[in-house]
Length: 484
Image (cartoon, rainbow, N blue to C red; front, side):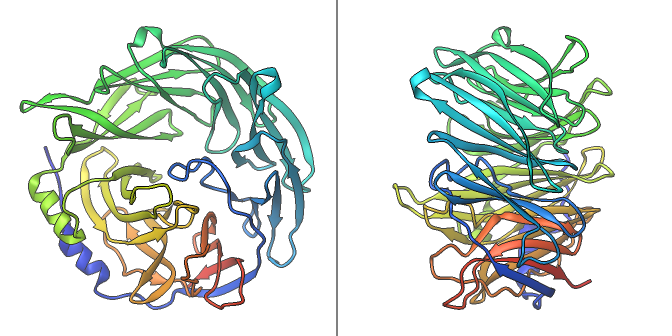
């Protein structure tokens, strides 16, 4: 095992928080923003974590909930006070938004519709012209009995391909998946079945689709110890399978996979980060990462990062925690040169129906283009939100520009509540102190920041929806330009 530290975690934390940087924004333009929070859904795992997309150097489109069954897709330009266009979207009684995406020409809204009288459910895709806002088409993508598992969809990074799918189960065990693949105009490319009956017992699968339309189906088998990834293409019926044993018995200790995170790279490879835990004690054992390279036809393994007693003791001392717990994999970022960063985050609720949500420290693990570890560090933060908001306003936004990672968080640091940015060099881990954006965000237990609407227009300009600390102010949509 090779693990490289450029900083000890504790020393790095002290370096991060020894000082708070000056206010960073160079220019802020804002306008009143009308928004109704989502009333239902899993607050722990947001179905639509991103509701804003850049469509030009100055323009962006957003999806905003206006009332119980009404949304709007809106395009903004340089003038935030007057939208370029607004298109209302009316939903039926038992219809909810499933996904929101875009490509160069269209915005895509996918909804999930239940028809109780027919005993059915379906996914519908609706296309909107990003130039005019006009709805172009509405297409039923896939349907299934309402008693089946909820239908699902995966969309490629560029919005040009999607796969809608229906999980077929027997006694809660996943047997197969019926799928339909579409292009950006919602023209069906192919129907296909992912037959999983011979893979061994499993209860769920994760599906990704790349910009070429290849589908990657990932399943855990062998009592959550083996990871199997199958790639399907749209040209023929060839299935390429790669699998690896990630759990098992190590030094006499039985370990199993407890959390996974997948990231597609557009070179026909899939990155999988995995947290494994000890079965008997339930304690974190290690972080593993695998690159499934279907172009080369092989797998590449990163060196295992062990959560040794020395590491966990140092981390717990820095955070004040009694043990390492509630850490979940939250992102894999890949640079154009192939350097990789895995991010884990501590997230939990206090327990109880209306308990607060907490988002705390970030664990960062960096690798070079050959998956050799280069550095790792910890970023301390302490965010709290009421149950009604969940993680909609806390946690973090991450954006990679070249070899520099930009993190955006809502925090109260030294008595000042604001959006804070951190800039971290991907190759070295070197970081600047967190800098306040300068929005002076409210801190009164009401909705103060909705991170779903945050997007980068370019490397120096972002959009954000927040509520200033002024008592009479409501939510504001802001365009923020940072200093060079």
